[in-house]
Length: 82
Ligand SMILES: [Zn+2]
Ligand SMILES: [Zn+2]
Image (cartoon, rainbow, N blue to C red; front, side):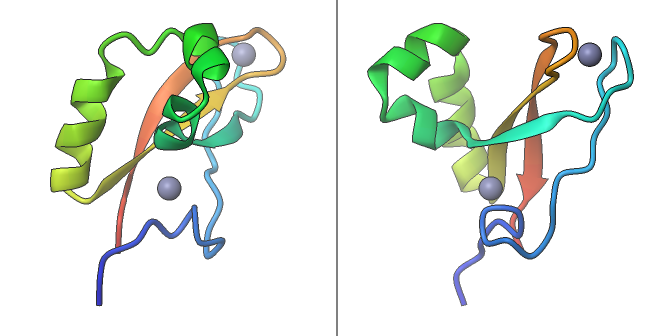
């Protein structure tokens, strides 16, 4: 069985709160999905993320992009694939 991300597959949801204002963070999905879309890629400015994502794939981690709708805080959250 290949490993897969439980969040991408709908088995679980990200339940993280904003470091700044403690609002619930919205999961915008895998960073890899953003890398396919040039305009979105520019918008979130993941300058060094391509290296990170390659590293994550080797380690069976799925990088999700979380953002706070209250204060625009954003963070990359790594999910262990199972
Ligand atoms: Zn995922
Ligand atoms: Zn916030």
